[in-house]
Amino acid sequence: MAWRTFYDAYFDRLWRYLLVVAAGQEDAAREALQGALVRVTRHIKVFRDENVFWSWLTVLARSAFADESKKHRRYFLFLDRFTRQASVELDAANERQTDERLKSLLERHVALLPPDERELVEQKYFARRTVREIANELQMTEKAVESKLSRLRKKLKDAMLTDLNDEFQD
Amino acid sequence: MMNSKTDYEQLLAEVLAEAAPTGYRDAMLGETLHRARRRRRWRQTRRAAAWLVALGLGGIFILPRNLPPRPAASAPVAKAVAQNYQLVESQPLPASAFVATQPLAAGQFITPAETVGVVSTSSGNYRVINDAELLALVASHPAALIRTGPRSEELVFANPEDQKGFPLN
Image 1 (cartoon, rainbow over the protein chains, first blue to last red):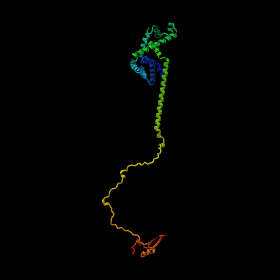
Image 2 (cartoon, each protein chain N blue to C red; image 1 turned 180 degrees about the horizontal axis):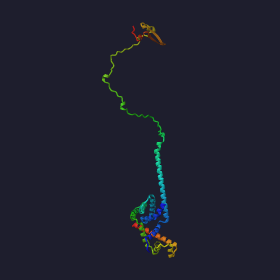
Image 3 (cartoon, helix red, strand yellow; image 1 turned 90 degrees about the vertical axis):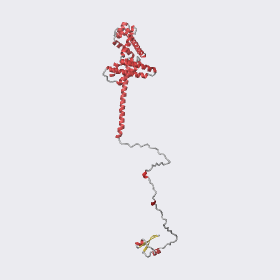
Image 4 (cartoon, each protein chain N blue to C red; image 1 turned 180 degrees about the vertical axis):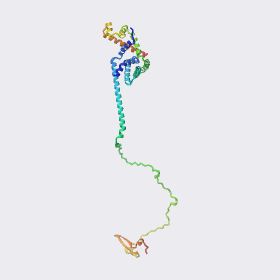
């Protein structure tokens, strides 16, 4: 029960954090997240402060990511990438503002969307309108709106992860 | 349109949920719980094994002291090999066991004297006498000739002093 509570509270946050640390590489982030969660089960203890707990989680997450990267580090090129990755990790660790980074990327890519798509996103997430209201206004079915929103979210996700990866490559 | 950080928070959560779909999230929860349980079982097994080892070691060290001594297991006997020789091992004697001789001083020599007279006998210068002649020979001393066997006789003097001997005429 306690584990499920922890999981619900921190899964998304860790996932976001690791996406930034892994420079948008979803597979690497997934592996690292799995490793980090296993480490949590091994080393969990009582923390007086939530911020200290989060810092501890980020340490586990980064070390899990580093270990996963080592497993896959087979060629010199990858070694080089890992070295540069370390600096990304360090930045992320120092700033502890992974969410801010993701949000700024999201903001940028929402702004880059074509007007109709941006309008749809704004209606749904900023104007807080329901899918039914949007569907009525656009004279579409709810299912079509849901489908379009899903495609938009995937588009935004791909764009954000590509940006993260490009930052890492530079 | 104005939007706040909170608006982006919601959008961000849903966008990233695309990267980590619900199925993946549930699968990872199950996998993590499975690993955690396996680890706990392994830890319990390891602890139990450690106890068993400790008990075993304790039994090895403590039980033999409380049990009656067992007859020693017979050592494996090497097969006797027939040998055509007998091996005898000797050891040097201690100095105290040595016996040594020393040359005698000149005064301790005993040499045979050359002035000893040699008495020799010659054959044929005697004669066997009979009982009567014997008794006649010692006639001055009362004596009796006692037959002690078929071919043996003993001359016994009446006077014990004569038994010691006396000169003949």
